[in-house]
Amino acid sequence: MNFDDTPQEAEFRAIARNWIAANAPKEFEDELSKSSLGRIRLAKHDMVEVGKAWQKKKAEGGWACLHWPKEYGGRGATPIERVIWQQEEGVYGKLTQPFQIGEGMCGPTVMAWGSEEAKRRYLPKLASGEEIWCQLFSEPSAGSDVAGLRTRAEKKGDNWVVNGQKIWTSGAHYSDYGLLIARTDPNVPKHKGLTMFFLDMKSPGVEVRPIKQANGMQEFNEVYFTDVVIPDSQRLGAVGEGWSVSLTTLMNERMSIGSRLATGVPEMFEFCSNLMLEDGLAIDDPAVRSKLASWAVKASGLKYTSYRAISALSKGERPGPENSIGKLVSGLMLQDIATYAMDLEGAAGSLTGTDEEQANGQFQQMLLSSPSMRIAGGTDEILRNIIAERVLGLPGDIRVDKDVPYNKIPTKGR
Image (cartoon, rainbow, N blue to C red; front, side):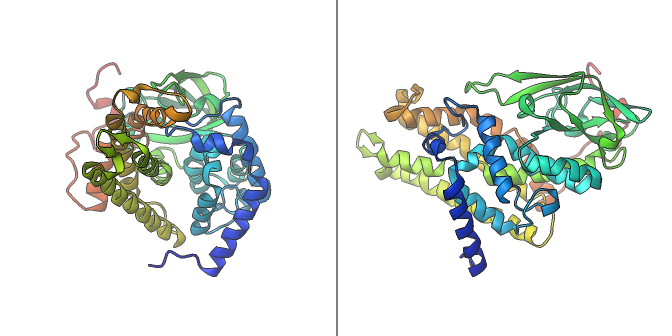
């Protein structure tokens, strides 16, 4: 397989590089380059507002959501051109963090299941950063079992009335719209009684409560729904087909997370090249070199596994279950590398700050953020089941509640 640019790709890369050089907000380059893994923020500016300005400029130049059709705010670019853009965008890609859920998960779901009117109304504003989207799936009582959710939607005339709670919703506190999956029929098995909607996050009855994280950030939220009215025109897919719709979101989510999640490998190599241990540089220690080699191999595997997904997309195929591999491996690596770096640092690992303390604070923030990466988009256990059953073809787990009506499943507090 030849990974070199074709003449057409090289031309595209040159055009993208020149546009970025002329338009990127270079005043943030240094700060973005030094931002800690798992804690991307700007000291004197609001990350969302700066990101919106960059996203708008990209949209005006035809560089936002490159792979989307032009009529929906994209460029109609090929999957490999999208990869080239991400490579050239570099550190400025961190400014797109508030839009990744909308671009990578919500947008493709609306594109696959929404009406033409909805696609033309919402997708261009999503692409330009004018409107931000979030994903309302996880619930306190359901854990990783999305189909076990309790939030209910009841049909009343041409509307649906929603009551319930979601949790761990990234970016809900600054989002304009959200994808919501709710239970519309409790009398059928749990996977068959779900329906997908999208809603205005400023609707009456929607309450967002940010969750304070160990690393000092507030990216996740609890979201409560009290008699929230959603028009039936904002339903995606047929009533009771929400699980099928959600698979579009989840497959795109795992591909998006797995391809974008930093593993910390380059930072770890640089760190070990400068860290002095009792008997010399860490990079010269055989045990350290063995660890680095193992992570380098895994990072290479992630890279080429993502290329496999890109090749599938280039053939018009939808993201499949194999994308769970990248998300599973990268999440584990993130935590392992941060833990090992903290071990090498010893007591210095508790330090945070700038200049000579930068590496210490970087891996500390990485470690504090890493558990969430092993939960977001599906826990390790869920991903292993998906890989075992749907990629390797192994027998499935025994699921005693699979064909039982949801309201007949024994549970506490329902």
